[in-house]
Image 1: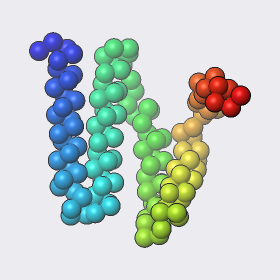
Image 2: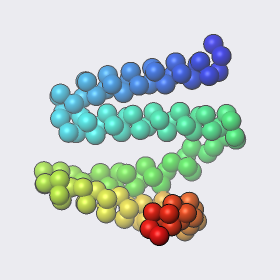
Image 3: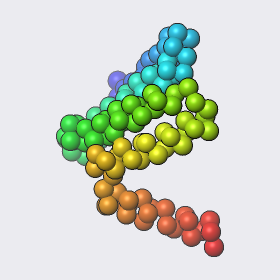
Image 4: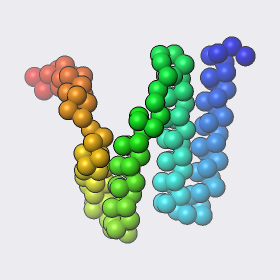
Length: 130
């Protein structure tokens, strides 16, 4: 197969895997199954993106690239276990705050990351808020 056709086939197979994971996990584990299947899907997407970037640009150091976000996600998961039975009005802000706090705690957000996002959003913010 041509490289583009191979990528399309891979995407279709990964989508099918994500759907099967959801069908298998959600009925048995409910919300936790949904979280697990979403996490699996995100892991698959990140894996594909890193592999593609490695082929097209330059090899990427997996460990260095993903260690801090994975650690932050684990910390967020620990925090979320304490509020998992609460209302969504509690769970969603707790998830947002604990996620950002965990990223800051492990050094997963750097000053240059914040400046990059700010610079990328600034033209759009000027148009949206004249």
